[in-house]
Image 1 (tube, rainbow, N blue to C red):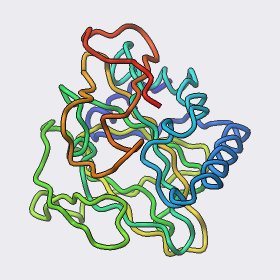
Image 2: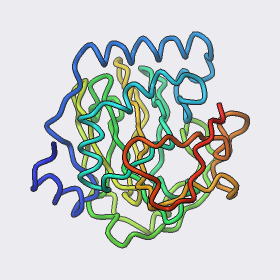
Image 3: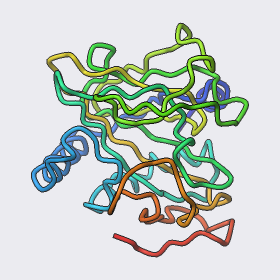
Image 4: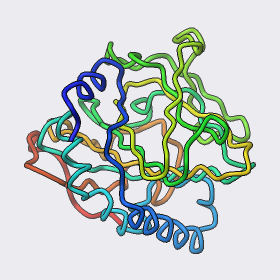
Length: 252
């Protein structure tokens, strides 16, 4: 569980690194599941934005009670999982993720999500760890983004340079099995992996069920087929659907 000071930090800074650590055997299982995915779908060797559309085994991780306990402490007891992604960042070729806010892409109203970021390998400045602007979430608004379709980027929307001071950035350095939690409005990004070591990370996206996942709403997330935002399956993980409007039908 998060301590009172860690809960305060999450709300003040927009992120927190708990004391909790996943067991080695769980990390080994995630590695094996990811290897299975890449064997079947080599196109996801760097980034897969919708793991559950291809392998629902990853729900095993999303259901870990300790993870759900921590998420409940910051967004409440009624929780839905709407997505799970994998950022592989292979050694020497891992893509850069430009500065952005997650909510710029997501059809959730009102906009609310706690992301749990799981380190599968050590995540360091050398191999492109997550970096954040503490407190950038506090206004609970989406800042100006610009389209950037340059080669080597994991995402194509980038925060306007006038919106933040990059000198205020902090690195989230994690050992394998450690996790971080961050708010949907937090400014964050990561550099390309130019090191000799992979930087695999898995994300779980949880929203309070007072929010609604709007499957029919157009989004700025440019993907097709199973990866399109309208095809996400939303899973009720704890409690009830407070909104009464979420669609929990299985899509893939």
